Length: 445
Image 1 (cartoon, rainbow, N blue to C red):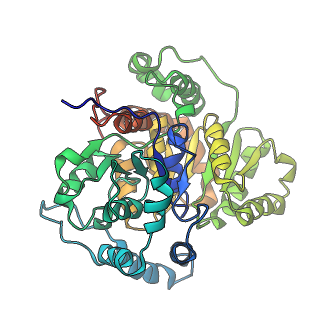
Image 2 (image 1 turned 30 degrees about the vertical axis):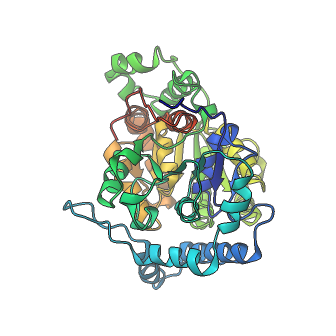
């Protein structure tokens, strides 16, 4: 029997379109050989490949923003989104027939040698397993004959047919599923069970503290006290909470911290102005602290700061209001993850950030953008940790109601109990060994 090969690192490949795929790669940065490789932006990338990616990114951003056009925006968006629509899960049926989107991708391999340089030149520099957070590099690696293992991390709670190669039963690509629904969906798309591994989404290790959750448990304990000032939820569930987190602090005098995060395309940024206006009284009174997560886009950060100044809250910048921003996307993730440790409520569209509810984070859900986010919203609702936003103009009213009732504390605990948290550790264990063994039980959803 051949000796099992152990790897200390791997090629970690992402695509810088929005934040979702880079965010999934970030927790694996210490396992990455030569850092995370962006398939659409690495040294030596052919101009033809760069242009294809650039055009795709511009289209993605245009589609994401088009919903904001009054009256006509939503209908136009829905027509365009049909290209990547995810079919209904029930009834159970064979969904392995390749989609038009997938056929288009493979035609680019055949006719334009798309990603051939990445696979046969860049990644050929060292024989290592390849792990990617986007499906196209994985399919390209198999198409061009990559010899080592090929794995893909899936980044939503359900996926379109495009994530799976043309002939899934013959493929060697391994899939790391973030949820049970994705694992079952892969089977319906024709992937053999031996290539499906239910790992959970890779959450940032610095927010977890190892397999025993040494950091996470301390953060949640303090968060629950801030989210339930009247102890309506805590007093009823004290024994159960104690079993998972230990004894909670008696009180925490810090203001409740709400983080509003927009996606990479900057869609829904206008809502920040409404949120700041609604919460200004609570911010001035020191009851709420607001974090505006602008990502790596300077124009979004400037928009947020202008919104704060417009209502004369600039004196609160750095105190009651903070803007999280860095032009370097990886540094932005570092800042974002650090800020999350002090965040009590995450307000965002149901993107890949839906999985961050596993950090004991209640999610206030802005309107979904795209088919996959509709499924993410459903997943959060089923977990009991996601709540649809109400009218942002009256956030000061409904947010306080949710705090005083203990509803947000319950949502935070539901996220911790029901959503996977060990994804980064599981994925690294799978990649390091050519036999993927997952001894730890995974959470319910």
